[in-house]
Length: 166
Image 1 (cartoon, rainbow, N blue to C red):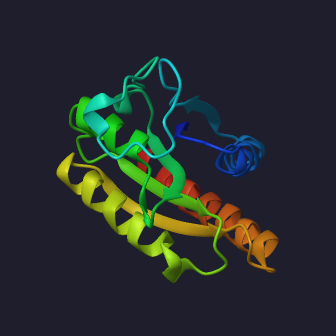
Image 2 (image 1 turned 135 degrees about the vertical axis):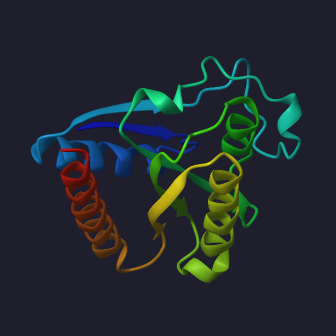
């Protein structure tokens, strides 16, 4: 199955989880491509107006059988870069989608859950079918367990989707 991981990574934390996910899903027999959302010019970390953001590329959500979309939590919200991406791409046409966010704080209720709620709403507006999600809390003493659980959950869901396609 073709899996696209579309991410925004500010500090490299989201990218590190995406790379581990790519490694796991590739070992499971899937073709996995990471596509990073990178801004043209300097990224303003306090940018709240997604209309002022310009990306180097806008990955096609239809290019893969399964999408994974991820980004950092910014101000208890979804990344403005991800919001901008959604504002510029077309419909996902019932594309099965997995979501995850990374945040500095130790608990999901400190912004991660709200960011996922926003990303889920953006997916719904664009016709994507969110089939799973997760929060990685960078300052949580159980961060490694959170990552391991996310990898397992996404691996299981990808296998289920692969069976549906075949």
